[in-house]
Amino acid sequence: MQDWTIRCDVLVVGSGGGALTGAYTAAANGFSTIVLEKTTLFGGTSAYSGAAVWLPGTAVQERAGIGDSTEKARTYLRALLGDVDVERQEAYLTTAPAVVDFLESDPNIEFEWRPFPDYYQAPGRMDSGRAINPLDLPSAEIGDLRELVRPEPNLDRAGKPQPDATLIGGRALIGRLLLALQGTGRADLRTRTAARQILTEGDRVVGVEALTATGEILRIRAERGVLLAAGGIEGNAELRGANRTPGRARWSMGPQGANTGDLIRAAVDVGADTALLDEAWWCPGIEMPDGSGAFMVGVRGGILVDTSGNRYLNESLPYDQFGRAMIARGSDAAIPSYLVFDSSEGGPTLPAISIPQATAEEHFDAGTWVSADTIEELAMKIGVPADTLLHTVERFNDHAKRGVDEDFHRGEDPYDAFFCRPGADLPNAALKPIATGPYHAARIILSDLGTKGGVRTDADARVLRKDGTAIEGLYAAGNTSASLSGKVYPGPGVPLGTAMAFSYRAALHMMG
Ligand SMILES: Cc1cc2nc3c(=O)[nH]c(=O)nc-3n(C[C@H](O)[C@H](O)[C@H](O)COP(=O)(O)OP(=O)(O)OC[C@H]3O[C@@H](n4cnc5c(N)ncnc54)[C@H](O)[C@@H]3O)c2cc1C
Image (cartoon, rainbow, N blue to C red; front, top):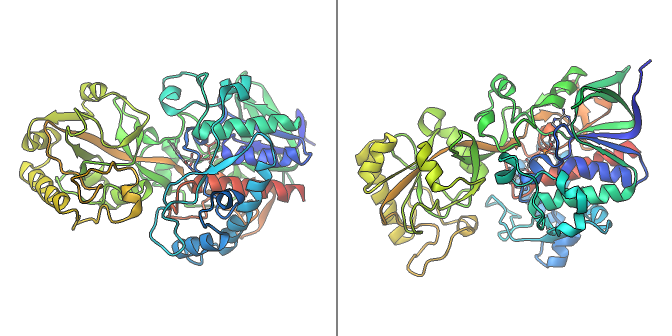
């Protein structure tokens, strides 16, 4: 006999895009639903995100008239992922239109298509992209809930709240889902409450034990099921070490202290199998003055060199492939690497997007960036052979002049030019010569947008044991589950898209 503090139909642990989609699905269908969030704010990494959601072939792409379809997306996914986990691939693809229709049936939720190319050259690719985004959310519409939404990384890391301004990106997604959940009248949304143990009766999961910030222990019974959508292990140095996950907890983009694999551990304690724990949604990171990492995306200039002073990748690669190239080069040679750039944008302006940002001055003071009047002097400052760096820059400049990167094919893929500013005198917008001194170098480390390994799940997001049987009553989605995309990041919005589709399926399965 368990001594229960609270009872509900559906219990959701975590409050990212997946968690709130699952919670909304249950609550909107008449089931009492509790959401537990460990930190003081809702949204997790999902709130930091750009909120591109890779849910293909939906009414949103249809409205935009871009020619996307489930069939086209199937061709693309299958080309990238092969015949692995086909049942889950199918579940993802066929659920996408349904989950979007269902979410858009709530007056608080609406999506639109925004261009952002798929990440691989493969059959079925959309060069202009197929990801959808939630509409921006005016501050007046969200009201007091605004203060509970995790703000963008610049503000969050500085301990500042969500400002009284239109919520965009991941903040709009989380804000809209919270509004929809609130509107059901059946959702109990709790912050500062950390789930720490999964409770069972016989072979069935029946609830969780959670600890509140005030030290109260809650034993919550969930009649229909428990959905774990509490992020990955990105913020847990010990678990990263044990699983040989490249990179560091300090460099990850997960909100600090949030995603420490608590529910992956708890699920293993009740028999869950795990996979892909050394995998993440990789990205290059700009080393910040305080030693943390900032997501570097949209490189539009400069070159990346390793500790030998040589280039080793196409700097315009989609960020996950960029991170994978760093890992393949090896941590001794490539972590840190250096982004070498010039002053052609007017002073030490990093030719890339940095999320969050520090000023150039802060970087120079901390030594994470250095400057010099010549390439040779810059090489000395970053400790790479001067003649090699000079040769690397001269060779790249020659390629830029001719518009062809003979070494790494930068500028040949539609993605490469997406963030570049076309220059009238440049034959290839992705290849800008490094020719205007002074020259600068920024330390680049390996970061991630969350790990993507976790508990193994089936097409209904049911958590599986080693023998392939499902643990009754237990579901997982998002980065708590091993991603169906394996070692590939097919396109913008796959982390959120899969999290939302499988959380939706989990809720449907729980409801029978
Ligand atoms: C700058 C940036 C931009 C990005 N842009 C995109 C994009 O456009 N599209 C896309 O698909 N992906 C994007 N990503 C990646 C994506 O945001 C994440 O991989 C994804 O949101 C993770 O979702 P999740 O639900 O697994 O975890 P999260 O969204 O991190 O949610 C997990 C939540 O669980 C809570 N939690 C953890 N442990 C417990 C516990 N014991 N009890 C209760 N709660 C707990 C955490 O505090 C957290 O709030 C981006 C990431 C970043 C950093």
